[in-house]
View 1: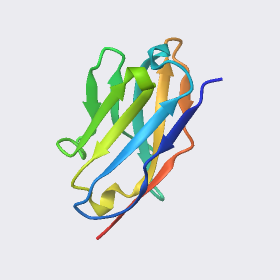
View 2 (view 1 turned 90 degrees about the horizontal axis):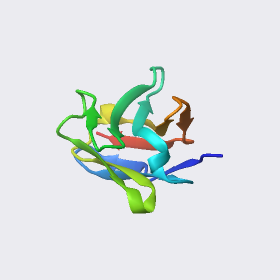
View 3 (view 1 turned 135 degrees about the horizontal axis):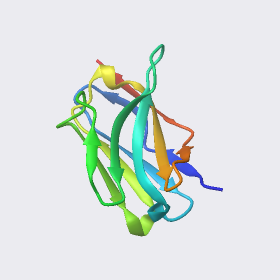
Length: 116
């Protein structure tokens, strides 16, 4: 059973930074891609960033230049470095993984609140 455990969320002032971590219970080489989604109150869940096994990255336009996704294969962990945070970044952030059979896995979510 694959488990994804997020950490690193919290309350930060606008302009500040946070780093989210997503630790997988097994090797992240089991996944074709991993990423981060977020869901704000009253809104649909949206892709923030993802990274393929080969290291290719993709970002939502709203976070380009501010957020960076990375992975540490030895630690089976994916990170999301969030800089220059804005109040509109406030949301629950979910770690996501897609295995080679196109099955989705989700973490439990971590809350990020950016105060103005």
